[in-house]
Each structure stands twice: as structure tokens, then as C-alpha cells.
Image (cartoon, rainbow, N blue to C red):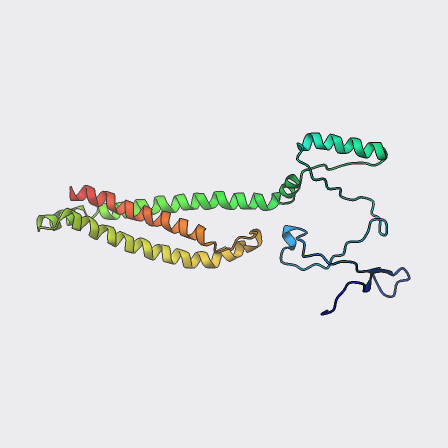
Length: 224
């Protein structure tokens, strides 16, 4: 630590083993994300030349603008011409590889998204129904206020502000609960905060609009 590693040597495996393999450091690369699951871990990794440490399989990457189907057949032909005994399997584009490696996370994300949208719709409909019923119950009160000289605009504004206050209190309580619950989802999120500001903002705006509209429409009807 704290020293230039270039040119230094280290070994893999147990020091008590008779097959210690020492390697020389010829370069240092940046951090590499091996998988989504390892995004919080710092794994010590080293690249070793295939000729010095051969495996039974390896990955072959090709950069090209050709369509993946055409490119796959060309690659197979080139490899077959050099060595027909080599087996070429699992040919995919990089995007397909990433998509396949993250299918479980995409599944959980999709399920969370569907249930979240359903919950948002139910919450908005519930707020609309409760606020509309509450204002509807005050129709006689609104009539008396207008009979005593209250302006329709003032009555509608009063009811709307009261509805906005109640809706705001509910949204604030919901936010406090959500800040605690969403941390349980942190393990399923990638480069997204559990308290994502745009998401919270959109939800709050939709719920607020639902409560205000639910109060304003029957208040205007009663004022007429």
C-alpha cells in the first residue's frame, strides 16, 4: 500500500503450497463492475495472460457495426477456419449479455413498478372519493354561507384551501413512512437512491392534485 506496484511481484494461493505462482505487475487498471450484486464490494482481481494461465474457456469480444446475426456467422467461420475443434457457444451482443445478467433485477423492478402504480391509483381514487364526499356533505353549509352574502369564489377558495391542508398533512405523513420503508428496497436498486427525488415529487403532485380537484369540483357545484 502506498507504493508503485509496477514491476513488483506477488503470488496466488497458499504460501505453504509447493506450486506457488509468482507474477509480475506490468500495469494497473481501474475498478471494474463484475456484476450488479458486487457493486458494493471491492474484489481484488488480476488479469493474467492466457498463455501463462490457460483456462478451458475464454471470452472473445468483437467490436463491429454489423448486425449481430450476420456477425455471429462470420465469427464462427473465422474460428472454424483456424481450428475446427474449437467450440463457439453463447454468442450474444453486449446489450443482450447485460440484459440477461440483470433479468432477476428487472423482474423485481417491474413487479415493484406495477404494484407502485396500482397503489398510487388506489390512493388517488381514495383521496378523491373521501374529499368529494366530505365536500358534498357540506352542501347545506355552503348554501347558508352564500345566503348570508358569501361570494361563490370565496366559498370555493375556502373549501379548496381546507382540502389542500388535509391533503398536505396526509402526504407529509406518507412521506415520513415512505422514507423509512423504501430503504428496504435499496438492495434491488442500481444507481438509484431509495429516496429518489423525482419519484417522490411526482407522487406528491399527483396525490395533491387528486385531493384539490376532488374538493374543488363539488364545491363549485354546491356554489351554483
